[in-house]
Length: 276
Ligand SMILES: Nc1ncnc2c1ncn2[C@@H]1O[C@H](COP(=O)(O)OP(=O)(O)OP(=O)(O)O)[C@@H](O)[C@H]1O
Ligand SMILES: [Mg+2]
Image 1: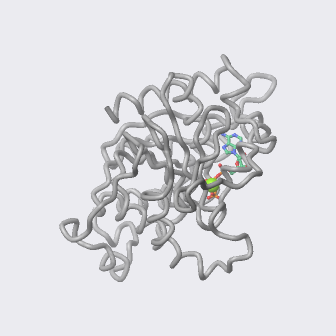
Image 2 (image 1 turned 120 degrees about the vertical axis):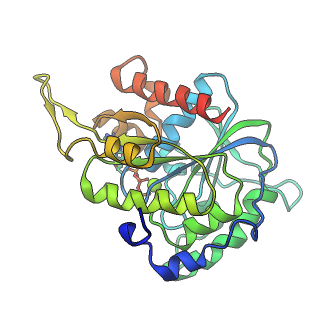
């Protein structure tokens, strides 16, 4: 596949430095960094990031979540966090612990009225804060909810943070998968390993047991095959996922042993295997 096929513009590709030039940063206090990404907005990245984080915690790992979505941080709301992180020494931020997860959000650092056009350029300095000045404590996994799109913000994260594996979220329909293709290409270009695809909003099962493929079919499988990566799982449309996010209490924390939670658990176990 060529760059043209996935519409990565030449200008964009030129911005990606050869991997020998840039130096990727580890994050203090973190063993493995997993990025959740997608070329497209609104496909369920944040919902999945939160629920995979809880699933990993339930597997007895120490887990943190970093909301890096500069354009619309949503993790604090999904975890019901309203306070801001504190600092004891005036330099290091202490993540907020909720549901056993250590949480930091770009939303804590960027004021809500910061204009959109200023946000992109702030990414680099914010990454420095995240990599050097957050007191993550003994994390086995840090899940990063990356910004949507394949713009400069995402590129900066992929180039500057030493990500152990990226998990790509897509919905089944064609248009989403095209955007996702762009996202995968960008990770390949920046030498980030894509460990698998998750297809979200696979179908809706109505009360009569019928399965409705509201957003089309098989997009996740197609993408996985095209790039020779695993399809880690397919998550159905489940109203409880949205309700729990809106309530600030993650689905995996409160609704256990149902079909959807089993699927999310299985995905978390696969991620552990792939990343170790
Ligand atoms: N499997 C699902 N079933 C039902 N609702 C879902 C599912 N996945 C996500 N949602 C809902 O869809 C909406 C978008 O999800 P979410 O905010 O996680 O997407 P996102 O990719 O992070 O979006 P953005 O690009 O804006 O950051 C939310 O209201 C969420 O609750
Ligand atoms: Mg989001």
